[in-house]
Length: 311
View 1 (spheres, helix red, strand yellow):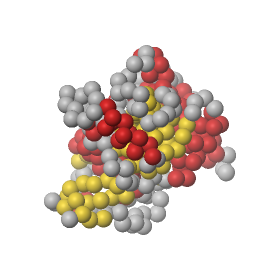
View 2 (cartoon, one colour):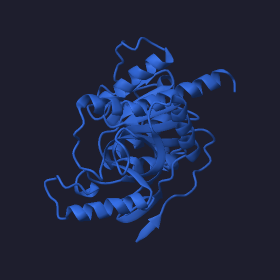
View 3 (cartoon, helix red, strand yellow):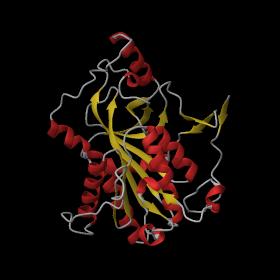
View 4 (cartoon, helix red, strand yellow):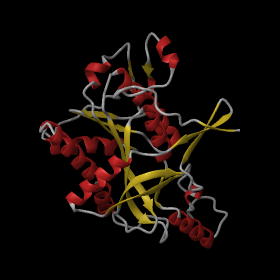
C-alpha cells in the first residue's frame, strides 16, 4: 500500500532539520562513509560556517569546483592543494573553501541517498544555518541543443510524476520532489547576467538506470524499437521534461525534508531525440561540463557580495 510521506518540515528555524529521535540516544554519531564523527571530530569548528553546499557525481569534478570557487572568490591560491576531508574513505570526496562545501555523491539514487543522510546529519551536528545546496552535473537533453543548462523545476519519475518512492519496512513511501522555485529563478537570472550560454527552467526526469531506464538503444539489452523510444521521449517532452539524469528525485525529496533550500543545475551533453551516444569531442564535452559550475559560482559570489554589502 502506498503511503504519502511529505509532511511539512518541523520547526527548525534556519537550522538543518533531522527527523530521527533515535539520534538523541547515540553517544557518538559515526558518519561512516565520510570517515567523520561527532566523537572524533569537532564538526561545528570544521563546518559551522558553511552556507553553500555543492554536490556532484565525480570526485574530480568536485575538487575542480573547489579550485574554481577559490579563484572566483579570491580566497586562496587556486593552484593550492585542497585536502580531501574524507580521505579516510574511498566512497566520497569532500572539499571546503570558506563557506562553500563541495561533496561528491557517486552515480544513482542509492549512492546520493547514502551521502545525503550523512551530509544532512553533518550540517545538523555542525549547527549550520541558512544553508543552500545545489547539485551540479551532466544530463541528456530532450529537444535542447547540447550545452544547454537546465535548472530543475520539478524532478519527475519515469512515468513523469513528481514523486520519489522508497520501500521502508516493506511499505512504499512516497515523497514530494519540489525544489525551491525562488532559487531556480535566481539562478536563471544569474545566467542572464552572465550571458555565456543558454539556460532554461524545466522538469528533470530521474531514472533508476542509464540504459533501458532512459530508453537507450545501445545497452546490453533492449526490448523496444526506435519508434518506441521516440514515442516515449516525445511524451516526456510533452510532460515538460527537459533532461534526464539519475539523482534529482532523491536529492529533492531529502533536501525538502531537511529544510534545505535546494536546486539542481545540469548541462545537457546531447539531444536524446537525435541519438544515444556522445559524439562530441572531449574538449567540447569538458567545456559543457564547466557551465553548471560557472553559473553556480557566479550565484555564490553574488550572494556573498550582497551579504557583505549588508543588503
